[in-house]
Length: 145
Image 1 (cartoon, rainbow, N blue to C red):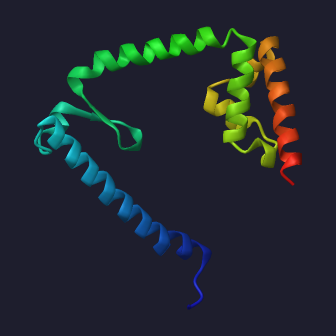
Image 2 (spheres, rainbow, N blue to C red):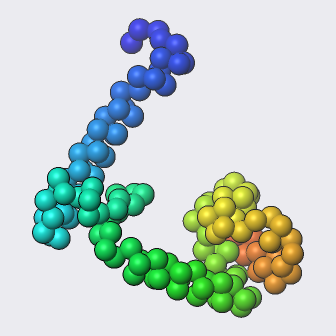
Image 3 (cartoon, one colour):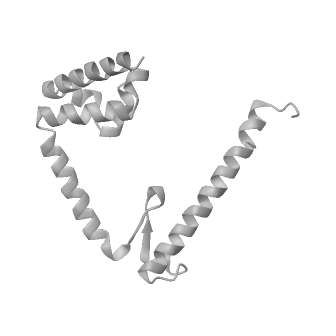
């Protein structure tokens, strides 16, 4: 392999190019299949379909229903977060998900949960639940070595 600069490596990374190409092919294929299931010509899709992050999509006519569902889910989470046991399970799951036992960093977990440091600082119940989950995750990481 010839010597190339760091910038050239980043700009022309063949692995990334191939992965992106393959992902695009899969996304296009799945989108086309989805449109066929809905009975929509893919050429009409821009007028009838909203695309979501991650390859999802929904019919524009269903936007109010989706909005109502997301609002309902948000209210359910807000209500559930009043319970300390729920908070503990939430933090314990997400700390594990974001590999707290390896990084010791709670920031990705808080970001994923949409919790600001101010919100955490102002909520004693949330602080206690997080502390317990951190202890559990720290014990888990020690036992795994």
